[in-house]
Image (cartoon, rainbow, N blue to C red; front, top):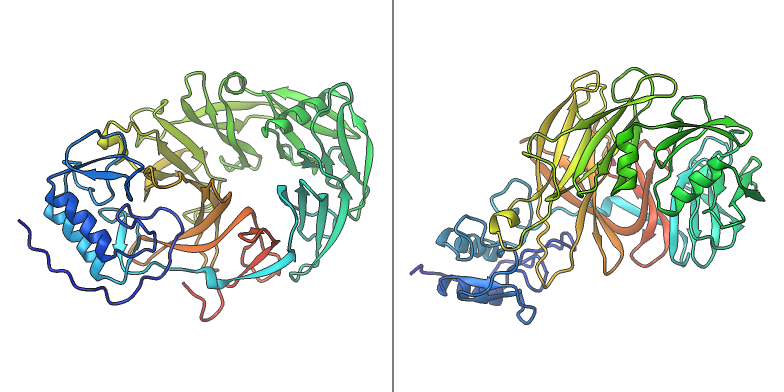
Length: 503
């Protein structure tokens, strides 16, 4: 029998992330209390435990029984469903520390002591206290002055845009009443961004023409094939706007084709490879991004396609000429196969290793088989696709496992790659990630910063919704626009690079 000496902890722990708590931390205060420690000791002394049951504080029960969920976080070593002396000592270590926090690459995904909180380095600037439930928030230069403005679509207040002065100030301009969904696209090719609405049966696609300087006029509905394709794809959130031929006019990708903007409301459609058409007819195309991935000066397309069997495929559409793309599937080598047991998403491309070549990250999410503890311990993770030149990618496990166990006592949250940017101005690309909490409908935003030891520290930034990133005050650091936890519209000023606010 293991002898346990219990002493009171020295101080309460600092609050860290409002998600992903240790299963032993049932009150979710990021410290292990005496009662929580005794609960784990009960599992240890019982020679095993089982779960999951909603009637208990942590979803688990001492002793042998039905196992219909993933093991307890304390049970991180093989021979699951019973705790070893080493695993119990780990919980005792958390108890004697000032708390615990999440840490990548540790033996159990946690570490003793309080976790970093970088939220003090982001100053909130409020634009509107009660904008209503936002359907949409986008960033775009709507008046052609070279500064990025904020566009919003509210269920109650409708369409509006906030004119940026380049120094962090904004002025609101109303456009129209509520619209189900909209797409920002220079549809008439005059250089000013217009607003397109979803297709209306026997009417067409409503749109608001930007006459310059951010003045919008509701024009007659569009009825052509291009407008129908774009507006239909808008309704399913699968319309992607990008200038694919670098002529200064917005093209778009919808369905199995890309549409070249000829100007004057005229578009020419070109089919995409057959594999994309098949994806669109099956599970769809997820997260399409445009970037020059092969370094030849023109835009390629990166995305994830889902086939009829729900298999996820990372693909590259490499630009061949003015109208054609070649399909190539990119298979993560860390997985024996990409099939229905995994879900995959990709980040927007960026130069992660500072070699002037465009890389990207893939998020790999196992679909857990709750009857198999081994599957439960196969964590979500990022895989880095490092560009070796000419769109040839070498794959590297990024070394950041994303534990997101879904115990019955916690809401399920999903981690996603959100942005690649130099957040603190040190010349290195950092990685932001958002964890979506369905109950609050908020993203809890954090970031990974590489340490001198080659590990990644995770810092909490803020909680909000409809988050978008841009340098609004011209100081060279990405700021964040969105809705805060109180429901107000505004932006967070990034001060990570300022003296005294370095992480």
